[in-house]
Image (tube, rainbow, N blue to C red):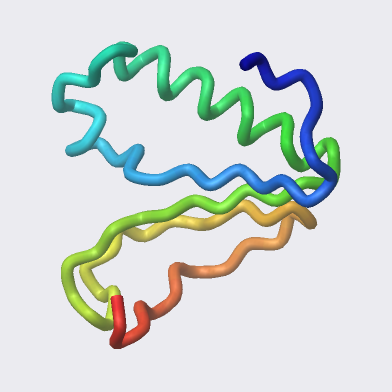
Length: 88
């Protein structure tokens, strides 16, 4: 089924598009194609007032091993990566 419209409560959640993950073989779509489509969607969603959530994996519970970076929010504010909850 082809999606032609988005629910007004739709959000884009981008998970595991980290260098180590996309360097592995990706099937059925090549990693550069997945990245290009993800970037296009992440750029388009805010223009429709829809949120984009970027998920980064860290190994330590307090997240201190996370790569420094920023998360783009729909209102263009930025914030540092937060701490993981004990349950994750």
